[in-house]
View (tube, rainbow, N blue to C red):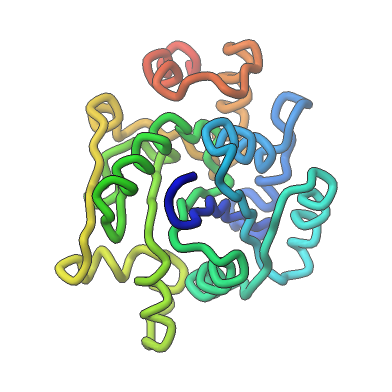
Length: 233
């Protein structure tokens, strides 16, 4: 890239309450959810470092083992302080900005990410997002931020919720930051669709959608939305 160093941070843990270990579950006997998300992200980020951000919890050793096998960069920190884990990860990899991605987003839109990165580069916003207000289906969130605003808050007494939902503080105090909310018309018109994985039912639905797409794990996200009703029925 021609700009300051950017990274893509994929947040992954095995301690999901509703579907434990979901990020390591294998879709259609072919690929783990974490690998799928990583590969979709990598599709449009060949020159951007990709880091899996997980915890030091012993249960997340399996995530690290997968990363080592697949030669994926990773970072480990406190399980219950995602904000601090983000800051320390950015410091280790000397990031000036980063894209936030969750590992339970099997249809993460790499084209949307590319568009939002260009907006971030051009205007030098603090944050470019589609979550303020939410303007996309669940599972298609994309947030890009400079790291300075995170570093500036390290000595602040953040709430438990702010530590878990790392952009919450900035949205609550938006007048202090330069935030751009990017709205895609097709996404905004389909906000009620769930393209995330929280339950076994969600996982089976995603498997069926990919099966009906000939297991093309790089299928365009907009195509998934256009055909959602048929593919998920």
